[in-house]
Image (cartoon, rainbow, N blue to C red):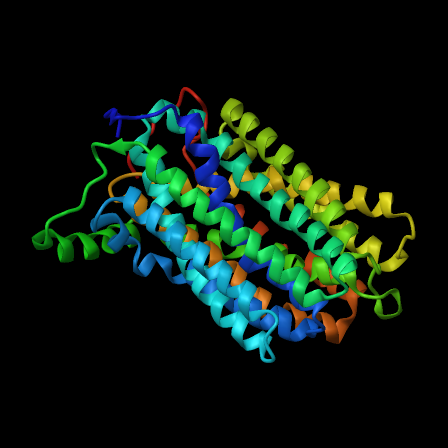
Length: 429
């Protein structure tokens, strides 16, 4: 893993753009789709149910992660998939104005989600191959930051742009068509950039056909033979049980009229307060979390991090109950919740790296992220129906109750106390 890459440019030339590019299609499929459908009059039940199905490619991507690991180079996968993602974004732009826009755009979002999930496998594996161990540790915060900057650009800047275009054009469909068209152009340019800039690691190579079948099944078998894997999978599935439901209904809550329990914010306000200020707070929380873990280790920080992740969710109960008119108060509450989430989610990311250590780490990390996506998809599917039955105040109370299973699992975890510290050696699982 410490072998130098051939013809390797400085990591700052490609890590920021690679992980910014990893974040944008995820934001488009998971978040922009929710706001777009809300603007176009789709019900909360349908939005939560059908957009939650878009998590499925991230859930099942472990099934083809060994293929990415074994066939061709991850560099080739990255460039090819960025062209495909650009084409999918263009297809969304073309189908939004159509008469059957909901089904048509959902079909294209499926292609986008599948391509994005596969791109994640290739990008994460490429990161491990292109950098020596000390640089992998040094740039973890950089990759996370630029992934979150993609969330700011998508959930903040693009949502604000969509709202402004709605006002200037007078058409919701035209506004969203222009937004996704611009994203398509951006991704094609990114593909050309990475074609020339990405390094060519010596370890990034395909395997012979004779070793493919053996390598494919070995990657899966070795993962499920890891020590206490059942407990690890329970943690991956339950840690975000509450957040998975909150995430699906937070933006519809901000956009819904006050008469039905929402806050009645405009699309531009959601873009600023939730998508921009909130994601900045998320990023700051993540950077602080990474720094503290590097000083104290993951084991010591598990409980402080899970507390910081779950307790700030209570601000949504207060927002739904009081329905404040002051938008600055709303923005501050969202920033507090996102700050805690960013800090607490660091523990989750590092735990996935802890589980993935050893042989086949590219495939094993992809399997971990697949279980992460499953933990987001299944609860999110029912969240819209639950909210419509309970109302926003009681729904957000239910979200707080849903934090309990993650506390029970966390209490049983045993992690190497040295893991996560800068001086800790990275052993095998």
